[in-house]
Length: 587
Image (cartoon, rainbow, N blue to C red):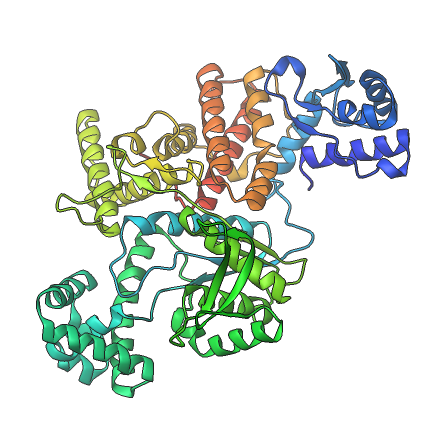
């Protein structure tokens, strides 16, 4: 089932071709949802840009298009307004048919793509040698949303975490493991090491205060890079401890268990071939002993061409080399059609440079999209990076636990005030769902390229563009079901539907825009569009609910409104699930 906007776009393009010839069959009708109901539901602005091309006044262009436009099955008679805008208002009986159709469709009328792509989404990519902190929140939340949206539309999504599992930080941890936990090394597992934060803190304190330990750590790095079997065994144990730690956080956040860990160590064997391939492509230049690719459009402060170093003068490699190897592998082995990277905005230049190198090397077909989805910082309410009182970066687990604890306290206080007696299990489940959902929604509702202020009070509020507000709108519908003893899934589909009140039409028209919103998010990877859509849907539904009786309405209004309520709840549940947020049946 095509969306209304897509259907209208196709009809307009056919009308434009019929009016002005096949050469204009692909002209964009510049179609959009109107912001003012007095101008109808949709507006096409194509007549204005076409006027110059066909040397006619815009209103005459609009008139010729309307003479060919076939939309009488969807819309009232279109109108030309102003200098040549074409306004369209959907018919009431068409909307009634649409409500019945989407209510019976498990996908709410949202089509899958006709040409699915193989998409690799790179997230959240923590550094294995360290505890996950607040800086890992955004890549985890955003990347999971990207993957869910693309997967829902029918794309074949491969989730990959480019974990930092190689390099100098491991020397410190391996040395600490050897001297303090020899039984873990003998057993070959991380079960006796406790949690990662304690283990890392112990190792760091020794490294900062013990010169002999510093030397042992440096030696461990040399042994690791040389492939010493015992050192590799210790490295694997440290990696296991870290993965166990961040998997627990992923589970708390609802991040997919299908993420494939491919760390820097995975690409290590491929790096010499990357350098050789760049050399064969004629891109390598030796500069002060380092092997480089000089970039187009990038210069240093002196205005000199800026190189991307792919092999250092000492023969070592860097992040750029590993990223080049990763792209090459994802194209050649994973057969990707689109690569999505979810990293902070500070890496924008890095990815622009890497993307340029792989394009010039001929490794990436023109049909393959390389997409960097940068994000801004999470700031404290003082406008600075979130820190602990001691000045350390806030562990991600602590931030999430605090959200749950505050939600639990709010729920207990509210239930006590309402005289409600709820089980501890219910309170705990609700606190976790609302608390984690609030943190994720607060992040996703922002333009991802911007910094944002992290505020528990704002994100946990029942008012405004927050997860609790969305969840409450969903719960409101479930309350109707319980109060009226209604089984929404068994509502009669035979009774003719009747949309009479403007508030009903406002809600339904908004629901019908869901397909276009999700498609837009899949293209530009801006989840805040979906958040804003869901917020507006919740507002419009609450206005409808306050204005229109549901359970006490006469037929056929009663069934129509029940169906509208249920479809609203399903739309909210779907939208929130694409954001990675679960719903509650009651709050």
